[in-house]
Length: 611
Image (cartoon, rainbow, N blue to C red; front, side):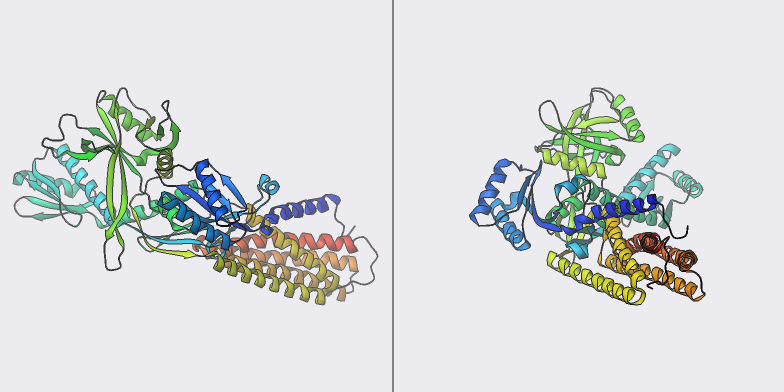
């Protein structure tokens, strides 16, 4: 029989709509202004700190909504932003510089919805507020590493070929200077370099010396690799810290943009993003006393206690081979970091320690800190700081798994484990610009976006009902269901973030959904003019319009996919909401409205349609 749906189709539609309502519901509860209190590396957040904060807030008549005491932080919710800002000022003044008091936003979703993993949509920086950083990758460090690599390559090649030389040292502008004993060695090495792949270029000079530098291609590859790896590592780092909504993208040849929604205080974000956390494992030169003459192959480094140790310059292993690192406490309740190496790193460490049993191995921790000014724009320069955090006797061969100790505080060990797990930055980064987008501006954007969405929705509803009567009313129901499903999908999908352009995408898809129903309704009217029966007109109207609607949506979807692949940031946000909207509008416009019309008219003797 025409225009009849089986029961299972109605049950399926009801089920989809109920699931959509359930996962769209958290967005009605909004977010609470909150404060997150974390300690500096030398301080501990405990219940005494919590009690003191509660007393300070009570003395200043600041009412809080709730307190959440975590393993490393305290989370306080407030009713409004005025109380939040006042509380931050009071708490920061009370705790001083020993603690980080950061503004934040926390979802106000009820526990029963949270238990079902029903969370509100993730909002972008323009809708939620947060911090924006423009970070510059220090390409000078990249070039310095490339020069060091060229020096090591030349030393290895000279040794392999048995060519004698007087001097091998770094010069200016990425160059390495090689001076030979005689012309025979000089020409022999030139002949060897000419036959070698062009990863380096050289220039001949009189008096038997050469200047060698990396090729332009190698320089370009090194710069590109450093930039791409830093972007990848920064994404890993913020993901490890639970900041999954963060935007990390490239800008130009050596800049990276990082946007973190929901954080109104830059201190913690700077600590996370700017940390370098590089590890090197080196052998201790126990044959040389720190007060004696230091050979060229060694250098002095200090432990955290100020002890001077002579280390070989040659690095056994770097943190690049670390695939996992976790925090734990040893049998003496001291913090330690458990290291897991990849196969290559495990083989290197195993073969080295097997041949140096009984000797000392040092773990050298390196980071870059901001220091002074570097130019007219008063941008801070980066200064290298390194210290030995662990000295251990090699008692047996190490494998892919070992542990390092020497951290004073648990938080320090946790932070190091996290940064090593996310990966060490290929080159240090410098924050050259930072902006804070406040929650008041974000709430204004949300208000304007919702108003635009409601106005467009009501205009479409009014037109459809006036023009198509009951069929217009069915289209209106489908339109509302479409909106619910879009919001639910945006809330469920882990990588979807709603931005202002995303709201524009929602409005656009609602218009597209209306267009589909206009096509169907006009085709039904056309079939009625051809003197077809009412039931047949409805059937043909939906069937004939399907191909046109499908073609229109496929072409739109192709454009959306191109926007998502080629675009970035807000353009991707627009593409995501538009793509989701196209999929849900196909369901609601074709199946949803058909189900309503079938309930009203299906299988009945109808003399006139309200269309």
